Length: 166
Image 1 (cartoon, rainbow, N blue to C red):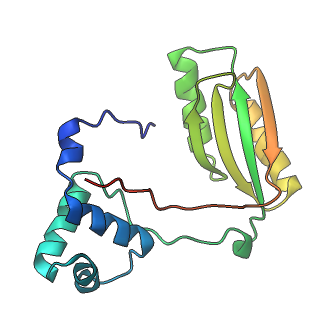
Image 2: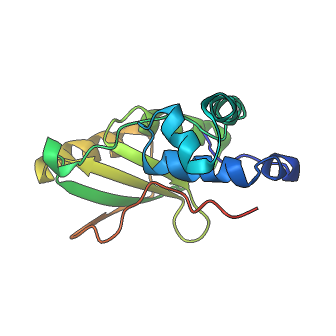
């Protein structure tokens, strides 16, 4: 359910400058061959491949995916949904998390600090699709408040993390 992990200082120290370069290259274009990645980071194919495999085994690289333009597949509306709950029990959270995680419209799902308990990023085709999603969301578990904010324009969206230097 959570991607928040207690990363030990040793784990981040194991990433040297070449590992970090590999991560930056892969975040830019994961379709490159190992030889091309190696050329960009100054390694031959075999040591480059071994480093990539270690980064995957260590959970630094989670997966390699294709990024799809949501508008070109008919998902033109992005909605940021804030949720407040009156119930903060573990059982309620488990049920809520299972329900929300099973909804394909939900792209991101966070437990928050502050005046909102949960934040969801939802993509749908149109307002009618959002209404169907909304009804499914509010019927999943008791909620105190749900606020929907519709994105008018995407100004910046990146997937590459800013890999800090060694």
